[in-house]
Image (cartoon, rainbow, N blue to C red; front, side, top):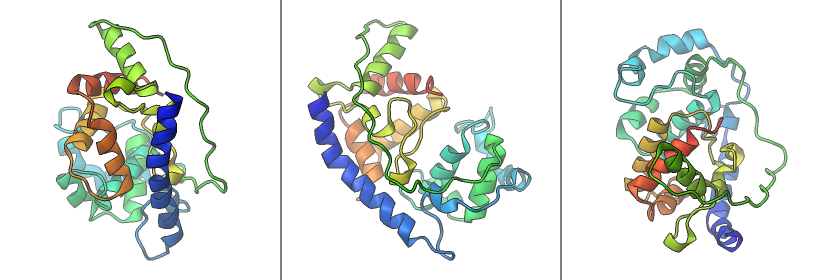
Length: 239
C-alpha cells in the first residue's frame, strides 16, 4: 500500500496544491472567497445566519429531503458552500442557492447551523505536515452492522489495491481532518446518509477539469455502491 499511496500522491496532491495556493494568493477584498482560510477576519453572526437560513429549512430540516445540517462543523459548512458557489461541487440546486450568497452570508449561515461563532482560521504559514503511513487495521469480513463498519474502515484507511480502490486516508487523513490549505475538506462530524449522498454524487458526476472534484470521481470509480455505503458508515464514526 505504501507504493500505491506514493503513486497516488504524485498524481493527486500536486493538482490539489495547484488548486489551493493560487486561489489564496488571488483573493482580494473585492473578489469572492474560494477557500475557507480566505474568509478569515469576517465576524460570524449566528443570529443573522438564522434569518438567512430560513428558506433552507424546507430541505435541510429533520423531515426534509436533504442532509440535516444542524450540528455540522462550521468549516465543513463554509467549505461546502464555497465549493457550491464556485461550481466545483456537483448539485445544481445548491449551486444556484450558493451563487446568491456573499462571503459574510456563508460565514453567518455556518455559524448558525454549527453553533460555532468563532471566526474562520487563516491559512497556516507553513505547508501541512505529510501524515505518517497508516498502519492497516485487521481485515474483518461479514454482513452484520459491525462487519460493514470494519469493511468501511479498511477501505478508508487501506483501500483495496487489487480492485484499484484508493485509501481515503491518503488525502483526508486517518482521522478525516483533511487539509483545508490545499483544498481537501475535513469530513468529520457528518452523518452516514450525508456522506453517502455526496460520495454517490461525486462518483456519478461529470469530469470538470478541476482537481478536487475530479480526484474524488477518479477515486470512487472502482468502488461499488456497497463500498460507498460501508465507507459512509465508517466516516460517520470520525469525530
